[in-house]
Image (cartoon, rainbow, N blue to C red; front, side, top):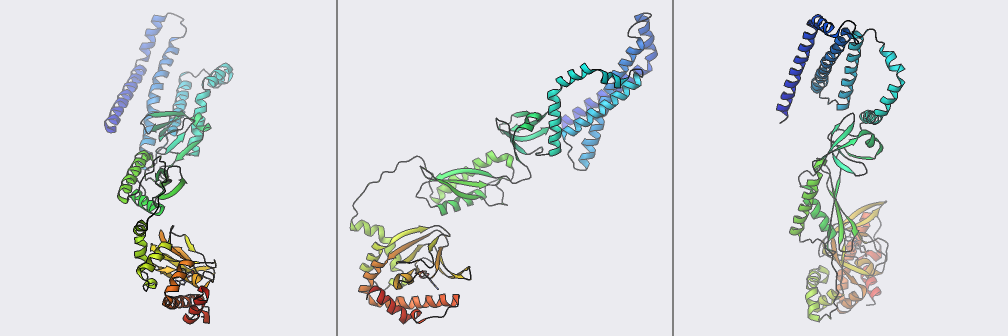
Length: 481
Ligand code: CMP
């Protein structure tokens, strides 16, 4: 597309140059004849004289040749030499080169053809000329100097995306000329912003070489898990076209909104100029990822709470997963089906986000926990640094030490991922112990082992109260058994 245009332009340019040079050559060659012809036609003492007319024509012809020459030099210098060195000369610099080059050429030609006219005096004495020129060129000069300062500062370059002006025109910079900035908008229109306007307005620049971020919003129902949503959306977005692999997209909660949980996903497009398409693709990927993961977009809803009396059968149905979980816990293996059911009734479910503290060392505690889904880490303080002593998985329990001895919590317990735990309180455990005194004994063995584990991590000696027998008697005392 651009190749034939370039060839056409070159052909026109070469033809025009040849014609201008030929015209100048012919005029110079036939100058005496033309002069004679003019003098004959114009009479004895014409004003202006034939010589002046001939000089004026010569000046025009030289002006045309000079213009073409300057353009040719401009092309050779900036178009070829700069390109060879892989430097793209700004249009403004090329224009200034042409203007200065042509003016110098024109002045030389003028003094050569009109040696009697004093050019300096002509300009300096003509105050009115200066005022008129100044007023006429006020805007133009403003744009020109603003253009120069834009070129000097180089706050943006051709190819960058900018947002400028009160109307917030956004698009890709196509050209910075001596008069205006040419911006191609994302609806493929061209907006010309005068340099002097641009110099006064704040301009937001998204450089082409830079990774500029974009933010896309979405929401979910309150019942959808944040940890799952964040994971699903991050994985869906990072693989979309034009999303940079250099920075992983960030998904986070913006607001707990009226209709649902409001999120934003921040990503970094490789080519910022294509952000409209990429934003759309990101939204599309989120929709499909939601479909696969069973997540739901929130839309304006109203929740009606209907209170119902729960029958024992319904409760059994609801708690069957908890009963199953508790009966798989080693510690509760000796319990009868009824006792496990009772424990399940008393258990309260809690969900913790990744990294959230379930238990804080030193806090008082009157309940223990069973990991229902997820994983937790048990950590002790080792000279100001957190040291992990155990990782507990689904079906493992923790928090029993404080519950059974009444002492403060011995360690921090932190959720490693989104984790659901079942909390069992003092009263429920007492009922179980009353019926199963043997349970106290097996529990005291586990606790003694854990205590020794803790002692070895913190270099503290194992005291009598930390042995299995010591723990057994302290549980019995604490629960009044
Ligand atoms: P508690 O002291 O109530 O609170 C912290 C809990 O971390 C503690 O009960 C135990 O359940 C658990 N814990 C402490 N040390 C260990 C260990 N070495 N292995 C497994 N769990 C532990």
